[in-house]
Length: 247
Image (cartoon, rainbow, N blue to C red):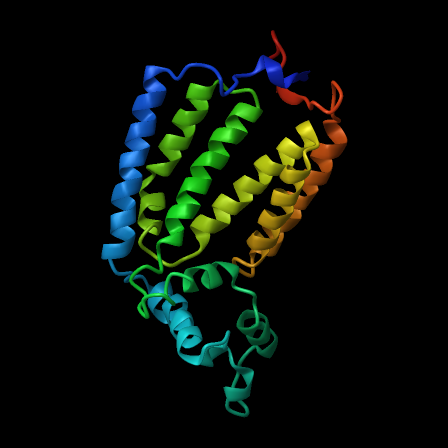
């Protein structure tokens, strides 16, 4: 399939009137968001990762008033001769844990972890916005981009993550948000898009140890998009869309 550069003015703009399907999908997603907010507060996390790793880490930080290391990752606490991977322990124990630090902000005011999953709602919203904006940037109609975002946000696995502590949801949200921001910078050369893209990449790197691979892909995409999609019309960028009559 061939691609061609399409000026931004040829795509849907925010000034266009909102259609009925867009209103219905927006109301449905907003209603689901309210339910998920209540669920993230009222339903305790019972998954293995939350009970064995994520929540204990928050408790340690709260009780010691500093970013301490969990006992299972503390190399100094390992008995002599014990068969452990010291390198992996040091890497895991000293990892930035940016998303856990964000969750800590919802623990400090209350002294309890009942609201620790609330940041997942921000990740959920960010995931939907990233998919929607990416779809429109790549040439989809606005209603189709909204439909794609709404379908993704209602996937049962995504909904389950709203009341749990694993970081796969923020990992996906930050990765897709980074893709959109780099694509937007390549198209517009807006400094704010580049700044947000770099901030998102830094946050993504600290979500979990395996995020380094996603960051490498994101940076490669950002460099490639800037090189392949030069700005046009005095700074106005171009987007890639299927050429008419291509197969």
